[in-house]
Length: 368
Image (cartoon, rainbow, N blue to C red; front, side):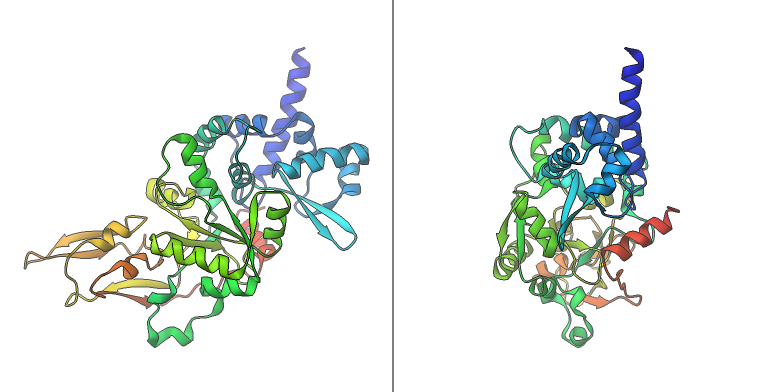
């Protein structure tokens, strides 16, 4: 009996090792193992452990796993329905990729409701896991982060507007996507099960391009036109949420609209001083002669990068933590006196060309 248990544990350990070697990573600890045991059946764990770093056909996975193709197809279909693998149609074949932890099966687990799994238990496990020593630091990335920040476009100064490229603008990313999908915010849904959710709307995350087609096919989101997505962008900006997107130059696969109390990335900054998003190419500057000391900017900052400081004349003015600010523009947008102006950073981020290049960079920086 002991050797059967050990054999089973070896399968899950092999899966954990494979996930830890994705470009994003997934440090192995007891919490990760508990999550994997609840999401993967033993046969799914065996198949997952056999994946390489590139998309593979059914035939290739069958060869690696030793499972007959018809049986394997049933297992892979089940894994795809749970968001554990991505099944990607290409020409006359389907290629399969193992979903990473983040952005990956964490989101796909909490993008849905129902009793397919115990979401409350999983929420507690994920919450503890992401707060385990070193986990968010590993997943966030080193020089290449998993996400980047998009500025509120209405606060871009006219003087530099012609310098701002399309990849920096959420509206242009959405228009070029030709539509996508609107999904449930996984972080806010997880927070609901933890009893810590804020009152920000839940169905405000956007998937774009091929990722949106997969999301719709799996029933994880609803189709959305360009206008639908632009309306979500406008709605979330009015609420002071932060726009984060896939850290790629061309064809980002998602835009999230994030709060500092639920979002895994913004909470990583607030609670662990770990940055999984690059800042935008802007940073706020205060015009002291226009500031009325109201403190609205500090209240609106989702990552506490602004504090109010007393001046000699008794008026409080905002002080910015430049090393923390991600340049979202929420403070400038909320300023009633126009005292906060977004200035172009001296060093500009040019993200990786595409998802493949981002993954290569992240893996290389981690020695994989």
